[in-house]
Length: 161
Image 1: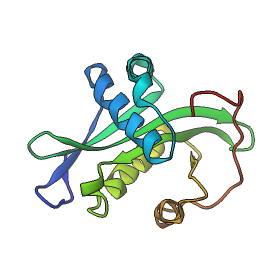
Image 2 (image 1 turned 45 degrees about the vertical axis):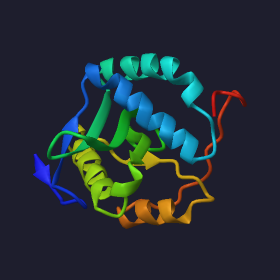
Image 3 (image 1 turned 135 degrees about the vertical axis):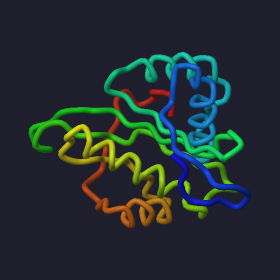
Image 4 (image 1 turned 120 degrees about the vertical axis):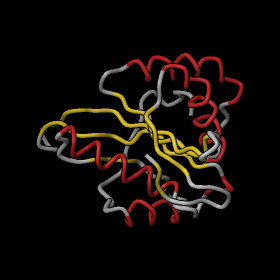
């Protein structure tokens, strides 16, 4: 499906496949680095984790690619369930856009594709965590219909962040 236009060429959104594990791991490692963590030394483990994620029937990976095939963004989703959410819902685990493609509509198209999948799967809602120290990221999600819903805590403390 061809959508949007970036600085060099139109782009498309496609679902990830098992062979995309190295690319998914690379994009997520860059996301972690951008957030102040360190991930590239764990890249082999991240590739294996990406392979497991891509094999999940309830997991979805969306890639934005330039018309000539070079990927410029990724978004991962997984299904969960909770009483407070009214049943099944989706979680946006990771979202990353290559810096030169930011502000070109790539992130918005990835988010609209994620919202379409949520509707298709009958999810009651989508949830995403956004770093408090990045107001631009929070504004991006608010622009796409999200609202602040509380903090998220993680266990164990040193889980690879």
